[in-house]
Image (cartoon, rainbow, N blue to C red; front, top):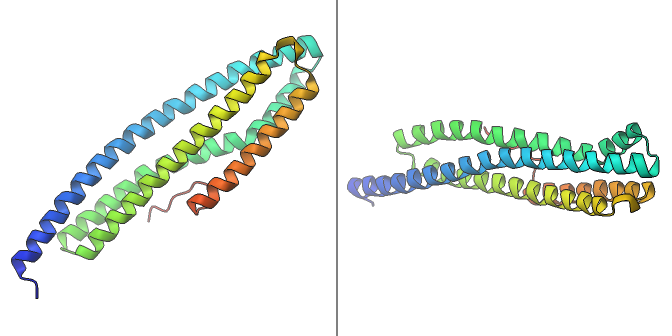
Length: 196
């Protein structure tokens, strides 16, 4: 049988480790989230700039109406816009979830419930890992999209409407496949996180 002093020491050590880990990881994730919001804005600005240049090239050299260009771009980029919105919601859910987990952690520590403390530690780590996966996925997808758009832009006046349409369809399909794969690997529908 474990003595009361040994249980107290075990609880204190676990609490110190947990609080240190929690604070360090939440600080790192908070920085990651801030950087993610900035990254999303930079990608959006870069994408809009490249799209505007492509629109002008195709309108002037290939007689593609600007309205038709906008429709093609919207169709190709709509899934990415939806994904970006889901990622923003996921990041927000994470922050809300950390408040919930913090309250649960305080309650478990107050009740000296070692099992609950261990479970919460695992839950915190899983949520942090999910946020990292989501951010890396978004970064990879946006980098791929911008590279594809830059490749089209590099063709300049040689770019044809057909090449543009094929590229937009390819971008949409690749994103759909990547999203499906990401959803399967995170084990969740979309990017929503359970914060209860």
